[in-house]
Image 1 (cartoon, rainbow, N blue to C red):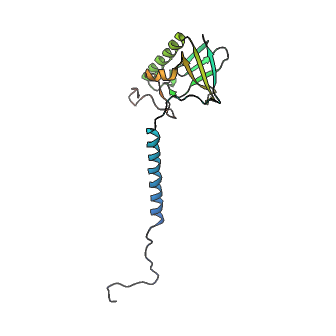
Image 2 (image 1 turned 30 degrees about the vertical axis):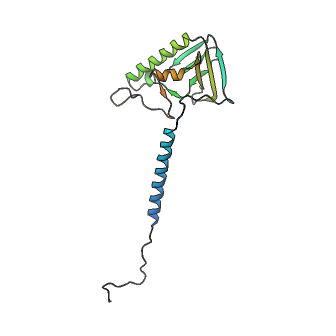
Image 3 (image 1 turned 120 degrees about the horizontal axis):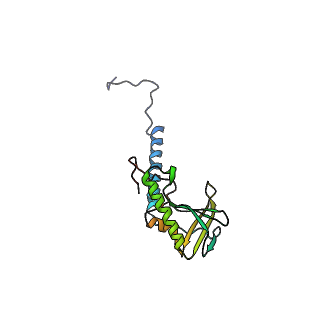
Length: 178
């Protein structure tokens, strides 16, 4: 023993990179990639209200429509019985589905605004997407005298753009989250 240590038969040096290190690196890489893609997606200019695809879109035009306003984002054509859900917006819930009184009040304002805008329009055009939601409503954009009803509700702070999932309208104190 010249150097003060002895070599035991069967000892091997530890690997330079362990399996645990490789898995950790892969997880970090995936997380960074996901965050980069999300940042890129959010920074890309996008229209909040894209036109429905031409191949599946249908248009229903009525100079004086016979529609029933159910709430801020749902209308029913009384002649056909078809219910239409506005695409690309989220309006507050009304009645018992509202999570706070502020949400209920805003839902009432949105519903009243839709009634007023439809009643005062000379031309109503329903542009269907060819899809339905889980409640059987036909997804559509509604144009009033050439203006998008959903965009008008967002502009008036009575709705917000749809972000792919339902988000709360109330905070834990019962105040609106806009």
